[in-house]
Length: 340
Image (cartoon, rainbow, N blue to C red; front, side, top):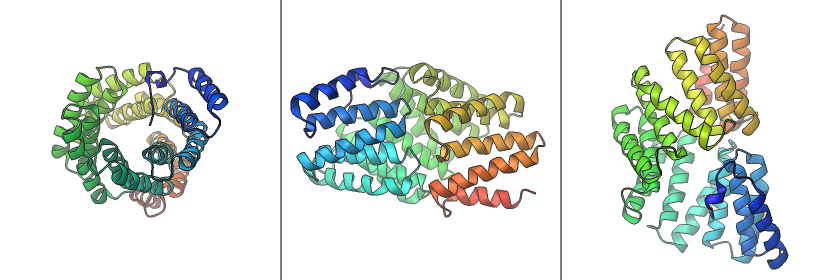
């Protein structure tokens, strides 16, 4: 994926729109460099949280690359990766993302080799997809192979290595191995702080992960500063209306709720829901998660009718986005069966 410093969220689209117009006029609408400009515009819109707006740019870039470069070119794999790993999964279409991931991996293994960093990127994306689909055991070998490639090809202190460490930590946590997850998270945070700085969004992601782990281990007071620092970074770096900012707001709300501070939790949940509904849409799993937490607050307020309605809205989204056999969907369904 072609990127540059100008793709930072909030930087505006004018530079890339001008570059696209120049390339379309000088090179034609079907030139690979035109595809690069389309790709950059899609990436910027996605980084700004406009997933629906990004999609047609990615799709047009893919069509150009398939025609001009061929179906087995690494740049074609990059476009497949964008549509799968970076857009369809982000929009909640997990089943739709899978063939894009798989085709991108096959191209990269053939064109670049099994030990190339881009191959590791595709392995990482497939692992993330399987984890999101609830196949934790299936995700692990993809993550482990990606980490091994990155450590060898990029070095132990590279941000991409940190990403793989984060992913393995999150997987182990999801599998219930909290103690095993912690060193992966801590090593990832140390790499990000050194390589990218203390105020980078990837650093915030590591802080969020460590906060979540400490909360899962029962250390609620210890988790809070990690969550608060992550939120401050996201708000400054990505803006107050970005999906990652919503994730941090949701995390803080869940922590306060766990600490018994319902009044303190409510505004975090409400703000997170507003952001997610606007940036991700009404059918995204993260929007469902926000509805679920708002239901929890309503139930704690003894408004069981409102709570049940919110829970049912969340369930409908999960069923649509994840399927009826997904662990999250089943868990919500079982919960609702027990709610009078």
